[in-house]
Amino acid sequence: MKIILGNSHPQSLFAQRIEALSRQKLFACYQCGKCSSGCPMAESMDLLPNRVIREAQLNNEPALMSCRAVWFCSSCFACAVRCPKGIDIARIMEAVRTLQMMDGKSITEKPSCEDNGTLPQIALISHFRKFNM
Amino acid sequence: MSEGFRVAYFPGCTLKTDARDFESSALAVARALGIEVAELSRWNCCGTVYSLDAVNLMPRLASVHNLIRAEEEGFSEIMTLCSMCYNTLKQTNNLFTSKNNGLAAINDFLCLKPGYSGRVKIYHFLEFLREKIRPEQVKNLVVSPLDGVAVAPYYGCLLLRPKEIAIDDPEKPEILTPILSALGAKVIDFPLNNECCGAYQTAMHQEAVVRRTYRIINSAQSEGADMIAVSCPLCHYNLSALQGLVRSTHPGLKAMPILYFTEVMARAMGLDYRTGVRVIPQDVAAAEARLRPSPNDPGREAVK
Image 1 (cartoon, rainbow over the protein chains, first blue to last red):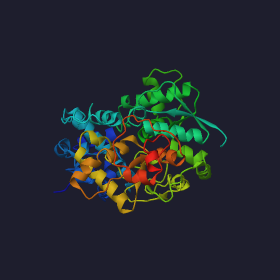
Image 2: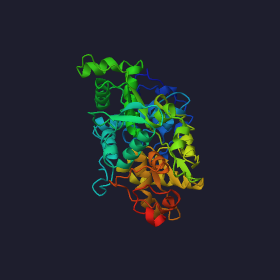
Image 3: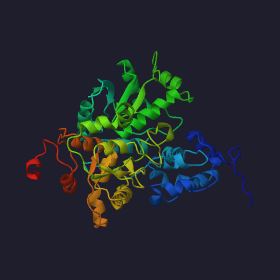
Image 4: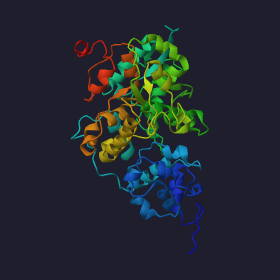
């Protein structure tokens, strides 16, 4: 089967939404995997960062709307400074997370502050700002 | 003492609570170096994280308010200690200096007249030290040299990435090296010194952060570090408070003291800075034995 990639394709609506939210060029990615190899959270992710981009290129909405990987990204930008194509992958992760939250798939886990009163507020505030709408 | 400098200081939430020793040690060091630090008379949370959403302006307004206040008070520069505040304020400020046209949109949104100009410069204390203070000035103030104590500077992500806000080379940071060397320390370069500690994931995915903590401490320890120096309260928390959990799965890992870089400086300079506020209990006996304690330390007599 021939697969056509591109953001002008009429069936790539989901990819277009990600591009609009992240202002990143999804289709510049040639899957070198450098983002995934340097990602400190990769071992906790169900889809590796390069795979998230690949599924977005393929307009695979179900895969991305159910992936947990975006909730593990801590926006450290290691991927962004290393990407040979200048893609800020952290922004794509945030776009997918935003789309999941807009779809009501917000996180259900509460922060562990109730049993851990020692968490600094810097952790709590950033957690609430990143993972809630 | 050098010629005096005056700089506006943005503390941020954690410097006033969990990281009190970071603030007090930095202020003591600045005073000793002849830097006058003026805290902004009004400030609010920086927002802690810079929103990566290209469309929604709301998460950026907290930072913008602080920049406006600095400008109202007549400051052209703001210095921060917390890496997170630095990152968020600087990235927000870049909206006003780049071609993104964030300036007009945000000023319109806030109904501000004349609005924020985008001219305030954001500095991290480390940049300030690099640009305005020579390592010899630090060296001249040292009263208890660290005499070869192996200190591993840990930079994390927020001072180095994204590229536009980096205070040093994102892949090979060494901004702390001249300062630590001036204190007499042996500076340890370790491969994970610019890798993320897991940051705010500590509130939700603690187990993932514990794995990061183990990797980072183990890497520094393998290179022979006696202690790790940090500049971010969140790195400090993740690397120190989670060590107990790390050792429950990796009992072989030795306790690694985590100090703010300003604490290391203050101790070598013999400055009294300890506030005793919400200090994370750490197994620092090994470090204490090597670092001479600060004058108000109750253990001072015993050590003598």
